[in-house]
Image (cartoon, rainbow, N blue to C red; front, side, top):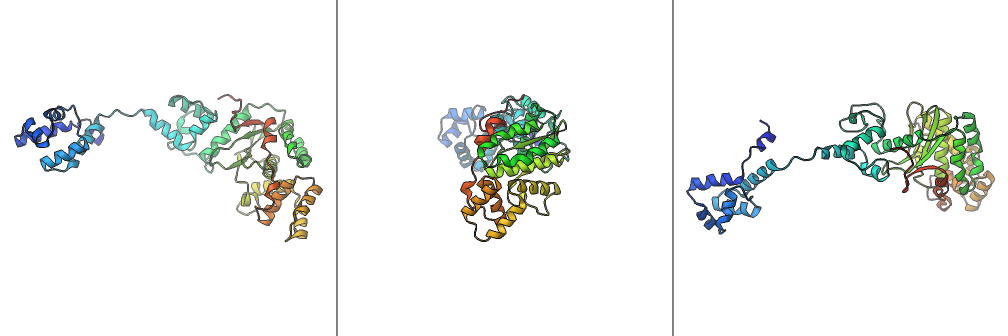
Length: 375
């Protein structure tokens, strides 16, 4: 017999106390006298109508010369045996919240706050699966090779971008148009306000572009994947800096032009420091995209020439003059110089914010706004 089934047969502690009093030949009145309590108190305990408090357990222990824990444990076992079974929805909600930031997804409008059955149905629809057990990363889910290196928060963000992209209408994708647009990007890199044109320009090329606020601890900068033979580019702008925006955008456009992300989404995390470099530990696709993005921000030959000529004295006036010659915003040049110098505190005031210019013309999800898509 299991421990759980035994609990259902646990009698009230009053029955044990009744047997003990009979063994000793004590009446209820005698025992009430010993304890110094009203006789009714003993009557209620023996009748199973009152439990044994910790104070009473100690008193019973002293009167009967047994451990106070003996009666306390009897009372605990009786209460556990008679406690209501928990709502099965508790474990199901715990499984979901233990794997995914469900409450944050509800707050963001990605899911509706409903009963657990409907919540599971929404999660299946969100992740395009037919069974709860097929949702990636759930504790009881079948083992899958997909997304093994993507955290649940990153995966939820990715599927939100997919959900938004699926409802966007753009012209037929043209690789030649995208290639020409990337070549023309420097025209828009001098003034932060010019960033407002980027969403429309990408859309004209047939690229679905969305800006989705990242989830806590996801550390995502961008993604490139394909939908209906056309690329989708998603950004988070989590750093909200002009240098980071153009680097990440250039990185994702390079992925698209190289045909990356057709089989598995290219989810780019922490595109700063070493992850934005040319280290041998990075996949070839990432090294190529990093090189293209860096060259977009500041042509590699120009950067190296400037660095050699000015090292070790990089005066602000020289940097500003260099930026004017390249027709780049100083913050973009500063970002590449910081990486080259290994000094990320250098002239940071030039790295201005851009989100205020980007969001009005973009398909946006986050910052208090939910994208108008079907749940």
